[in-house]
Length: 285
Ligand code: HEM
Image 1 (cartoon, rainbow, N blue to C red):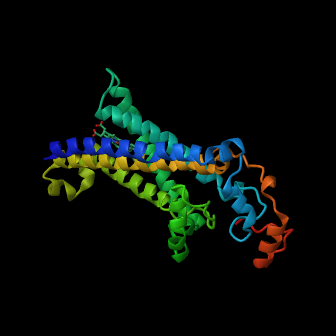
Image 2 (tube, rainbow, N blue to C red):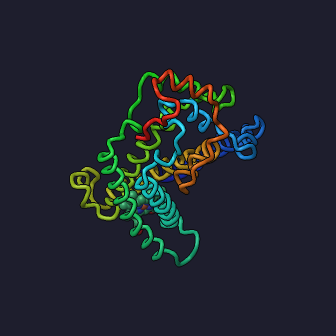
Image 3 (cartoon, protein in one colour):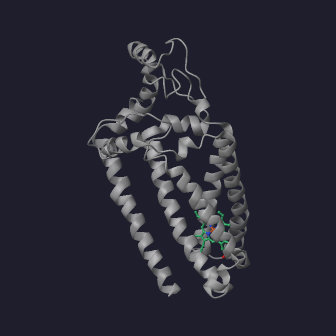
């Protein structure tokens, strides 16, 4: 049965990956070129998320650089995560489908080394979330999010105008972060059980022995890897296509020039609406 399941995972995994590429990413690139979004973003350098930040003093750190939105430990965490993820992906795929001779030792060594790095990094991220207490940015959803979701979908389907940027992350983007934490946790648990099935405790007898438990965990590790790759691909694609200046801040510490988005009348209106002094930037915390 496990053998059949493994074959199905490979077949379905391939179909889903191709579906994502040809059903979402390629059509979205074509749509973005045709509707002028690529030109607007990458030639004219005009980004609605930045414009919206400059128009909403209540939620968007009015007239502030974006830098303080992203704490240095989170940026370092993200880099360690990207590097470890890519190395674990390549070495893991090699372990499963060795596509050249003689790489087994080095690929296993890399996988075993980075599995500790990414696991410690994840634990650190969760501890930091607890210390910062900003879990609401990632885990809180309310009625506003549900109301706003259709306008976000319409925008991505090219049938609606840019949606309003009201919170740190939009309602569809926000679940990505907790999802990746949970999936990475599952990847670590399944990986450590493959490495030493005894860690599985009662699961060993449930699966019918250590070897069987390791085989089931290998299957889970493989399915989970595919789900994470899908999420990470869509997340990276949309991040670059729709929000590159913010990525530039988050990845490379480069704040954009926000002056082109200035509209004094809007500032006054908005500042008044929120009871803020127009000259005083809102707190960055
Ligand atoms: C999070 C911590 C992780 C741990 C503890 C872990 C552990 C392991 C272990 C022990 C193996 C078996 C190696 C062997 O047979 O010598 C393995 C295989 C594998 N890992 Fe990981 N891993 C982790 C993360 C990842 C990540 C992030 C990915 C991909 C994004 C990944 C993809 C794979 C793949 C594709 C295999 C081959 C599975 C198979 O043989 O079917 N792993 N992993």
